[in-house]
Length: 199
Image (cartoon, rainbow, N blue to C red; front, top):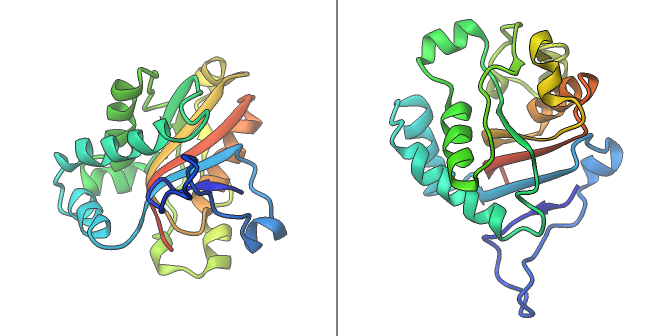
């Protein structure tokens, strides 16, 4: 998996640096077409995302979406998708938090990039344990079958290039399972986009 990193130093010929394929991706190749993460999940981005996500500072969604949009515009073919979908929260998690941070990012990205964004196509009917509390292996098992495409929305994804949007990519387990659900529903391809990636 090549993850474009627009924040890395320019290599000098005007092209942006991309990371080599990581060892975990060689062992278990991801099913998504490409991944773009704008920043490392480190200061100041980790604090901004924390304020946005856990302290309900929804106004920060505009800043974070703008940073991700900039990264995508600097990525060859980065914005060539037909539909933006947020990584969904389960109903209990959504009720507890009061908003889905991924939807707040996706809808703003949609406006910035002029790509339609839909909040209810991908669903999370299973309320899983918090991923942050789990090991790498536990994260993958925790999410098995956690996502599904709304049966009435299958025509919206059939054959289309879909981008999944979230705030942070850690191990990729969430993106991997959500991508699997979209491909099973007939999506032509899936890209994954996150504001930050855990180094």
